[in-house]
Image 1 (cartoon, rainbow, N blue to C red):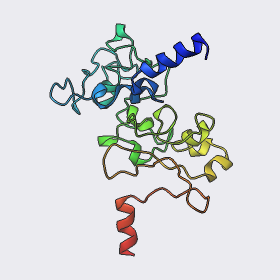
Image 2 (image 1 turned 30 degrees about the vertical axis):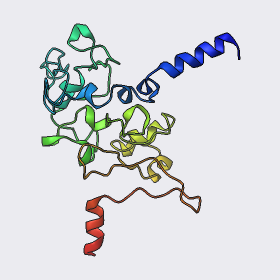
Image 3 (image 1 turned 120 degrees about the vertical axis):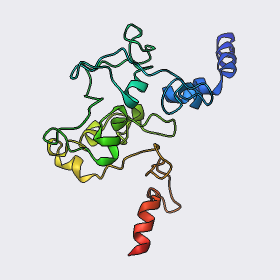
Length: 206
């Protein structure tokens, strides 16, 4: 074994397992976002809500979970920590009090309390989410973004995309339709996602 290869393997072995995680949130773990006894925001958030960055539509600071996300995902000069910063005027809209139905048909599961559309409408940030960029729909590592967009914009998507039923991933509550990565059954076919408790209850009443 060459000296360079040996040093590289030693360096990798010395890394904590979290450094080899596939997603950014995987590496920080639960306590990277949540603090059990020293919370600085709602949902026992470890980072204070960003009250500095302003919604370009309302000219007011963001609120709710969007403000929590922007605690990390905004430039430091805008009150964030500069991790993968997003910009309200250059991104898909977020932090909306309501959605114009002429623009998008957003499923209720993607809306927050009172019909708000926040960052969590598109993303489920928990490490249990196996999908690309923590999106709520499998996009085959970003190669099938149309499947994701078509959930809220079906009239704009092509027919082939809309024939494929998108399954929404959510871990926001423990009764949600959390979808695990597809597993191969003994017959070789992809196993169907487990039914949610609500779905099982409906079936038993029939």
